[in-house]
Image 1 (cartoon, rainbow, N blue to C red):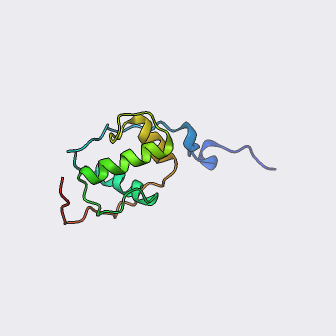
Image 2 (image 1 turned 135 degrees about the vertical axis):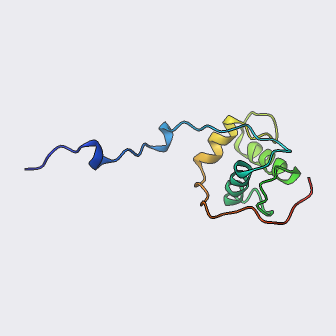
Image 3 (image 1 turned 45 degrees about the horizontal axis):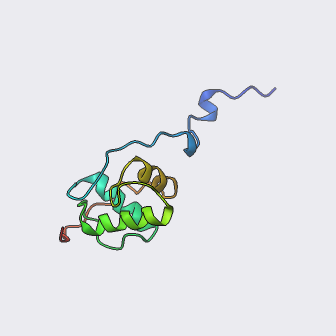
Length: 108
């Protein structure tokens, strides 16, 4: 006789629409893995074509601005805020852990 599914057999995955998107607001001058993830997500949609450096430079700012404009996001242009993050994360996949920033530096 079949039994009712349990929490263990069903899993705990939630649909993406119910997940809370959180993270820091990023802007030019910021550095680190969050910026590298932003660069990778923008690259998935062809908004960013430069090296993944983990440095929020003018190229990243321009890419964020272009993304915001293309998606009709009302935010401070070029700043990766909560609304921009929510939109970008909803249409891209999380970059793999093995993607490391490149050693080359791009100008700020």
